Image (cartoon, rainbow, N blue to C red; front, top):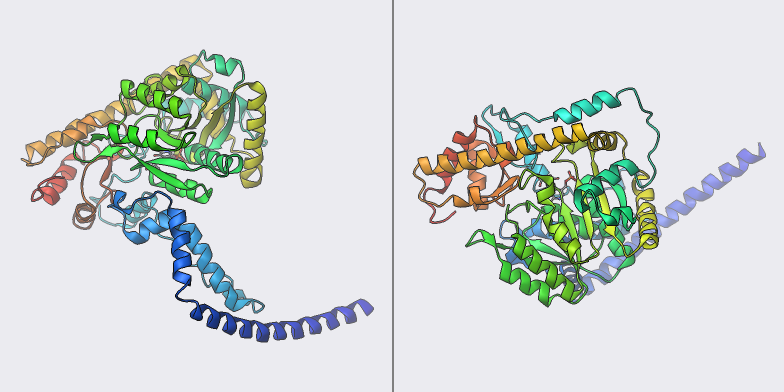
Length: 502
Ligand code: KET
């Protein structure tokens, strides 16, 4: 009884407090608003400074296919949303009604890649074509489950428990994954010099590394190629690592701007972090040659730079995962310490299983143990431990020599189908009498064709022909089939025939 009385009393007290708070907060809010409006001449400046700092070395001119709002949200979106939310909060302090919690939250801009799939799915047109997301389709346009994966699933079914994996994930899967990148007989693996954890596919591996970089090299920046996979910018932005860019693609020659890239590598402060695509560069389909990789590796050595390889397409460049690891092997020969993000989304078709690996090459076993323990500590509060099923599929396939052979054959089949579609797309465009050169379609490698189509031409393809692709003109060749290649070529010809260049 006594207890009740006291709590009633408290309740009334709380209500009075709340009313007081509302009155006070309104007054404070008005005072703050007045203060803010007096400061208007100073405020935009302060914000501009902060904004510039966040943008780091980003040059607006490097991203002609992104509108200023998209560019802004890509690089500083999270930061701006938080600022907006915080300024909104001032008005509701002490007067939290259920409806006011998220009033200041505005819709996030659509993802430039996954947003394309959303738009494609919403289109009822039966002739629609999706060459947006980098996901492999068979020649009937259907998603593929590899035979090696089906066999692994048969073996796994009902035989294993669903207990948590350790924070670092499946040891067996990680071990097999390291062999793919560092070599089957790598001494580094035997000497336990590689700190490696299972990651939530390639994205998770990049993010874990970005967080690790921020925690242990808090003043560092990351150099990112222009262009790159759009999500790289989001990942390092959300990890609060300032971004710089380096030259990569040369639009006129549709090849690598090697000289400018080397200049940027030379001009970066010693000991800088660089993000490199290990093979099948996304979105350009342009990779350095072996000789160029050697030069890059040499210059990294001279400058003491750290290379972080994103290897999301091992096997998709040449059809052979071993050959596609060449860039990494060159860096190994030169004695670098680097990091790698690996993914089984594409080369094993395990997109939704989210299975990948982050590895960091260390000086010795002791350092590797320390680094791994820190990677695990970063993972623990984020997702605790990674999912088990995809890891089991991968370790089942790679630890059985016969099943591994089946996988290698299937990777080659996927890569070859894409190469065939490159020839077919180019051939169809030439047959239509396109006045433009489409040689780059067959010169480029990997999953994508960086077509040179402008954002306006892409919009026409979508609006008039129901063809969906990213606005930077990237065509996912994995979505091109013998059934849609002619239609695609006709539509591309239609939107480009009056252009002097594509
Ligand atoms: N790196 C690169 C270069 C990359 O293209 C992707 C995916 C990833 C990492 C991440 O893949 P994950 O599924 O996390 O292992 N790219 C395709 C899909 C996407 O945007 O998420 C794409 O570019 O279409």
